[in-house]
Amino acid sequence: MLQPWKTCIYAFLLATLATTAHAEDCMVSTDPPARLSTLPDVMQHTDKSGVYQVTFAGGDLILAKYGTCELALSAHYLLRTDASLKNIEDFLAAVVPAQGQAASLVQQLQEKGPLSSGQSVSLEGENDGHLLSIQPASSPLFKTVVHYRWQAPQH
Amino acid sequence: MNTRVNRFAFIPLTLFVLLAQSACAKEPEAPTTAIAEPVKKHSAQAEKKSATQQHPLKVNFIHGEALMVGDPAKEGVVSLFAMEPVSPSVMASRIIDILKAEGASKAFVDKLEPRLKMNPRLEKDDFSLPIIDEEGNEYRFEYQSDISNRFYTLNYYSKALNGE
Image (cartoon, rainbow over all chains, first blue to last red; front, side, top):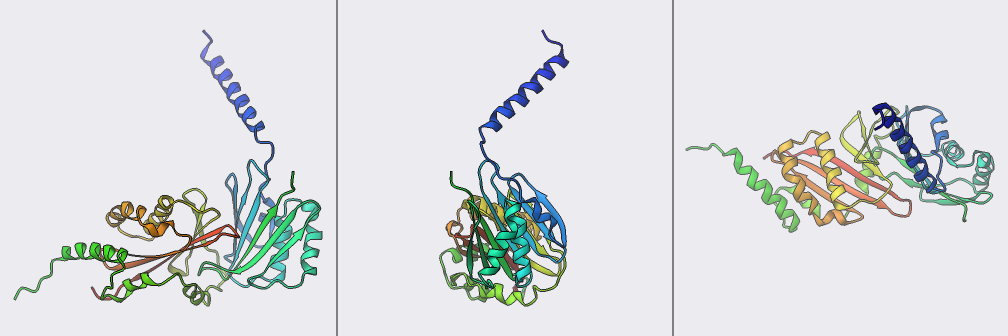
């Protein structure tokens, strides 16, 4: 029989291998939209394995969902005020998965003209799509909501 | 003449009111007739005027991925945001969690929970649900599904009834 400490180590190694093997079944995943926590005035953020949340000192907040075993990202930016052009552009630049594309997507957004409440806009990345939609907030605690959804590259 | 009213007479009365609501019966106490109305957004709009102060909101996750939000400057209003639809059973649990967080009595909540899980209204994409406890406090829940944007909001409003 093995000494207890050896059993412990082998069990640990087996568990690690098992986890790694399982993780390899997951061919793709989406990174959490961590750049959202670098927006101005952020007070606190939380990353809960697939759900990302940011709160701002002024009361605004962002709730996002990202695929831990798939390519998927959506985010909902709740504002206590109207969404200014800067709010929308900063949000877009921080949420899109490929940081390198942020500037050109913001420019595309600017070319489409001002986004008003009730409007949606579709932006094209190099091989992906980005949907933005502005609505009156569904909650009495907020005034506006900006929805973002990533349309991941087709296989 | 003995005019003392037995306090416990209100319990069967309240249960009757709850049952009567599900049968859409008309009730002399005005607030309970609100259930017959479809979900209206104007109550949220009316509150928006005061939603402009800049200060942090109270935020925490409940029941997995639902985000509960309250405003310290605005008592009696809570919003719960989710990014997926849920079963009536999970919806009932979320309603119960909000009631508990907002100070409803444990006895009342425990009695309500099994009844709530069976309420067919919780199967809808949008619903309005008033709840009245033994003391006559009204709790109103309104649920809205924005299916194309995959954003689901449960709003809670409390108000104490006047009178009995």
